[in-house]
Length: 263
Image 1 (cartoon, rainbow, N blue to C red):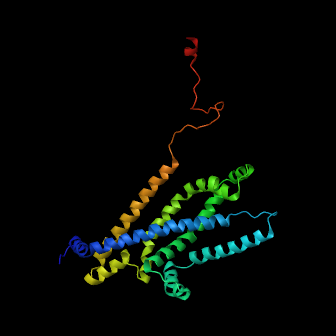
Image 2: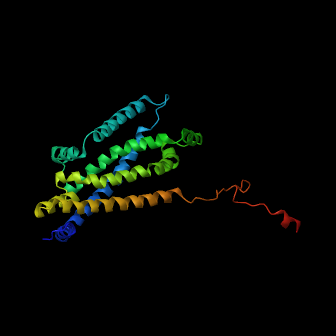
Image 3: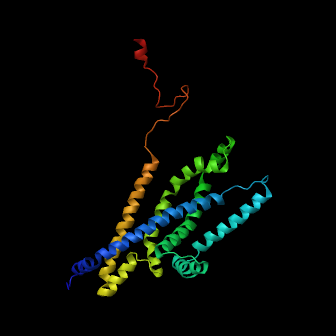
């Protein structure tokens, strides 16, 4: 057994490197699926929470909307106010058997991480929608758009760009927090790390490898999302297109030079 630190790290990696890489793959896959599904849940909940209630609305509509919002607010507050480790234990060992739901550990992990992420994204989406200038909604309604059409074609495209940093943060957090799902037996990176450290009695070296793997995953995802943000920003310089030939904008039409006219 080598006596130097790097030599001992290589011993751990040579013996358990493939196992830890498989665990890292599981962590990344669970984080990606959980973030994607969680964002869809968050957008759905956030949109419902911002549906306007006007005086002339049907009382049944108002009552139904109030009940739905109450349920959604309870969902958001519960999953934001309790640890995901406790949620995993409660859902997998308690709620699922109670309801007669038979699922694999991986399916349960997808579900738990998705609904946890959805609760955080719901508040983020709600804030993102409310941050858009109200004039955008008023303008859309003035041309006859419904609330759904306004959300899809006017508000959400603008809000999505503002929400991209938070979506990226949730992905980074999910990659790291997927380790708590080891309490229900998910064989992710930390689960594999504990097995390797216990077998070789080399905690420092084993967890050093684990930290490097987590950093590589989070840093790579962070850079890719940053590139996506720049892609969504578009070009720095562009010309405005218009279908009205009488309304040329600056940069699209140039008047002839006086010298050329004189010729």
